[in-house]
Amino acid sequence: MTKKIIIIGIFGFCSFLLFAQENDVLFQALKEELNYEMEEMKAKEYSPYYMEFRARELNILSVSTLNGSVVDETKTVRRIFKPSIRIGDYTFDNTHQLENTFGTFPIDYSVVREPFLPIDDNKAAIKFKIWQNTNQLYQNAIIEYREKLEAMKNKEKPKVADFSKEEPQKYYEEKLGTEQTNINLDEWVNTLVKMDSVFSMAENYYWGGSSITFTHGRDIFVSSEGSEVVQNFTFCSLSINGFLKLENNEVFPFAESFNVLHPSDLPDEESLLRIIAEKATIMEKISKAEKSEPYTGPAILSPEATGVFFHEIFGHRIEGHRLNDMYDSKTFKKKIGEAVLPSNFSVISDPTREEYNGIKLIGHYKYDDQGMKAQKVINVENGILKQFLMSRKPVEEFEHSNGHGRGDILSEAVSRQSNLFITVENGLSDDKLRKRLIKECKKQGKKYGYYFKTVSGGFTNTMMFSPDYFNILPIEVYRVYTDKRPDELVRGVNLIGTPLMMFSEILAAGQIYSVFSGICGAESGSLPVTTIAPAILVNKIETQNKMSVKPDWPILPPPTSK
Image (tube, rainbow, N blue to C red):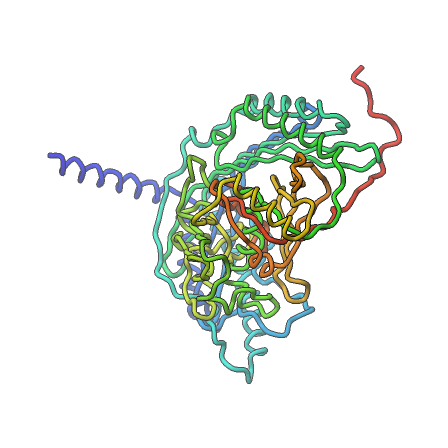
């Protein structure tokens, strides 16, 4: 009897899912129009060997405050469409990257002028807009393909294919329920106003504001290979930004943000206000702290700082598509099987992980933006480089995707980071890490080392036509003295360097891991990512001073409240 109930239950679920698919107007319109257009173009001189349609349904709710008053409340509904057309074959097609193009600005043939679809479920209107966009894109693809064919005359056949052959995937999620998409904006307005009020108590406060944005919707992917992937998403960002005016008329910025999957994942109001109050106090202290001088020597990076450090200087350099770019520095291209980190370090990219120690990870997804199933990838094992992050753009020795083809809805997907785990065997306690720092400082004749506690983000360059560098943007930084003086807060510190040199200087790591979530911007748009890392001790880091900004402050004082 139990088996019958299970079988009936499964059958009922499958029937419901099939019903949901058949009544999903946007999904059906995309499928039908793709099949129609592929069939019609078979007879053309330049018929596509591959097409994909991506669509994103967006529902955006946002509220912003400034100095404790609401200045904007927005509710937006959109459907955005992104087609891709490939002419030629998997080995060579219209997307092929030509050599010797330095200094030129090639036309981006993948762009469509009007990417928005009707937001109502009028299938005929949706199909018309799809047809309109793909017709334009098809003409562009033909021009692009002809140009590439002409450029490749009398040249050797490419060693690496332009597109990988993969098994089609099928996955469907029914639409989110109201309990997953509702947000009480009135309650959040009250919270934002309170956040502004807490921050405005800071000395030298000039202005500040808060905002919350909650986005939910659906990503739909269909391809001529037979892939059909429909999945939901949610994302919420809460932030407070402001400025302090220093005595010397410098502007001192303040920013704190929380990036989570859903508003329910944010701290409660009491916790938020406590966090903002603590941050405001720290920012006051930093604004009055001594300005740092350029420094080289030992330093400890907190787990948060380590996460940003690895994201910038390691994560972007294992994104496989860069290895096909003739102008990329290709830091690790020839290092598969070689040691790139200390032997007790491992690095894993795992978008299949939904949480870590109860914290939901925003770099999680089930299928990437090329319709490929997410995969756990071991990038470094015991210090040895094993694998790159791969989209459907092959590189030498790696011919297939490992589920890391990502891009926002207006960009072509390339290999990008997801959840980056840095794990270390035999980590040291915080006390031992600090003692080791002081020991290294004395060994190098330094009066102090640095402790980087919090950071706002960072950026990096991987191209050969400028130095292969990184820049981490710290917020809360301390000098750790060797003579037992209390740690001293300093300001104006930027952490800079080159990747291979920094990796060679790592001496040890801590035992406590933290989660750092943020938005990563690169060539395929802004995407949510997460890094999980411990603190690290570095034998030698380099810092430079931050630029000081003295704006033209208003001549008149601000109006009074009377």
